[in-house]
Image (cartoon, rainbow, N blue to C red; front, top):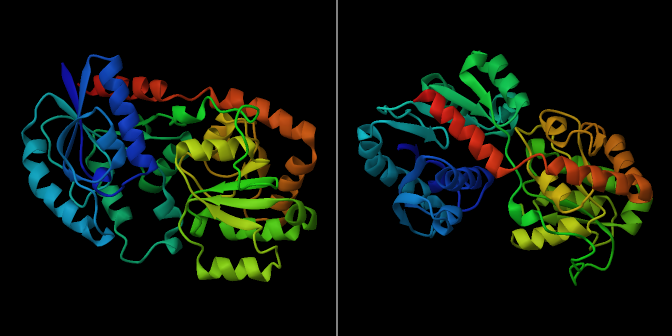
Length: 369
């Protein structure tokens, strides 16, 4: 029986997060659905998904007491994990994120490339950020590369000149916790008495939240009759707070909310629409989460997003405030269009599953051994 080994890199960087969830989802299914074993080598990690999983793990879960200690976790892991990674034979090593020096393993190596954001939007990252350099070294050293969308694969080929035969595309999927939620069976959160649009996650740079604020404030009818709820993503920055104030909106019109996946599913299910204004995404899971919950989606027309959502969304130009505003108004004030998007969205989301992602991933492993 062959083994797929996953390194510590992402598990010592994220407590929660899309990349660590991806590896936990596929590792669990590969172990259950095939003749392969899976193992994570993370001597010291603080990832909650891995801690709650049944994946065989070489290492211990130790909660991170302070963000500054991430470097200590990485240093400890580098010392403890390297001998294990170097000695294993008959194994596929799937590296979870980019490292300064790729491991010299005895078996074939795979790395997943999630996006080319650092290469396409360098202005949004510190000058000392080494991700681009590390990515290139890891991509060059890998025997095979998985890209999470055809859009990312094209960008990888164009920017780093990677030959297409070295790349496979494997799509991601929404979590199963979003599959069984319906607006008719889930009550509106008690704190919400007004209809609302929903935004989820990080907001800086290419996420384009600033233009969404401008578009929301540009429609007197939208800003009067609707709220904009922001799930997660950290406190509003000073610039965001100042912009909200400058737009002259009601004090509680734009609010941050929190919770787990079950809470987020309820917010999706009861929203007028989920809005995804990002300028670029390597894949983009939140629109599929929203669609799974019966929520209409308004999103950008660029990068991988149309590939993922198909025709089941109201598209807009992320660089145009007027285009975003018009899309919000079409969904908000056309019940027929909104219902059409909800129905199409459920069908589109059903095309993606973690089972399919795991099956396609293990097929790549088999081709390498």
